[in-house]
Amino acid sequence: MHARNVRILLVPALLLATAGSLRAQQGAVEIGVDAAVAYETEAEVFTASAPFGGTIGAFVGPQSGIRVGFFLTDAVALEPVVNFQFVDTSDDDPEAAFASAAKLLYHFSTDPEATRLYVGVGPTLTVINTSDTDSQFGLTGELGAKVPVQERIGLRFAAGFRHGFDTDDFPETNVIFGTFGLSVFLGGS
Image 1 (cartoon, rainbow, N blue to C red):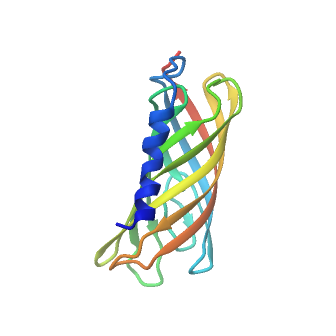
Image 2 (cartoon, helix red, strand yellow):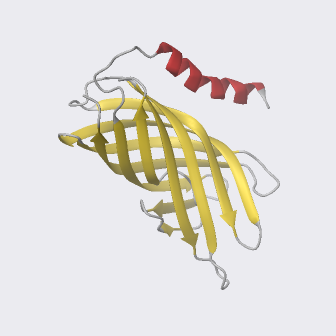
């Protein structure tokens, strides 16, 4: 593993170590769905994807999908994201694709009733099943905002970058993306 990749993986650990031990939202869960618009730089392809698996274009990634964020403190949340899609191909065999990410989010404000900016980073995994199963690991990072609409309901906007590592199955990929989502907050104070 390259030294640069090790430094990137240390960012989530540093965010956890520097987070305060606040209590108001610790233990809360954020459940949400996101739609995404993405641009893959190598293939020069724009795509759009819906929260529940629809996609326009050939690229599949963990930008959109269903996410569940677990607040470890008021400022830090661990957020798995999953997306499952069938991608229509030119032949008769559609491709099944699964994309996931495990992001660590740091919120710059701990007030759940105010708009909160956040930064998130984490590893990704994309698996595409055609006649063979191909996979690609990557890293993602995003900067976003959570905007409260009503008590425990909010909108979420983010812009980010995902890098997929070169593997036997896939070439290296770089994706610039934007997301729009809806969140429901459960538990906490």
